[in-house]
Length: 158
Image 1 (spheres, one colour):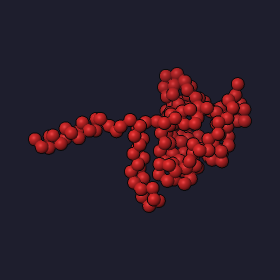
Image 2: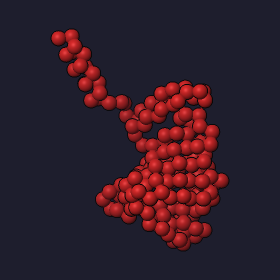
Image 3: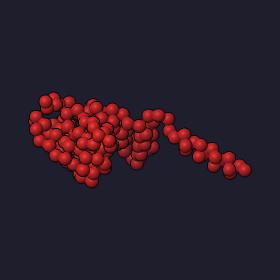
Image 4: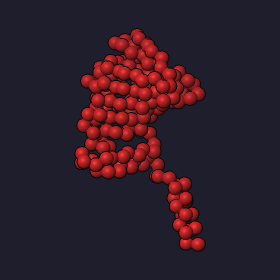
């Protein structure tokens, strides 16, 4: 009977899940520990997109690296922007995304799920989800532990 009650309470606790907008940091940010980040809800980036801040200076003490998940809602797009002085590497997990880029956002490339994408430092760009019904989801790595601090919004093409 005692074991049954314990199992029932454990399942009830698991079903309830973490509190809204809870981020769990497991480990010490001392440079000697492996650190795990669990994020259950997105925050909003400067680029006006939902993102899940995984690895960064703030979360784990990373000095020159960030890793996060970005979601572009159906029919959505980011604000045009640059990452001042930092490279970006993107793996598109889901969706079809057109990225407009260049000084006047005059160039364009369409990427699909499974593509690896490299954006050099200081290149103006604007990703656009081409689906009206499905979100586009990407994992993004940058050579910047404080990646949102170096985002500069860029005038959108007319």
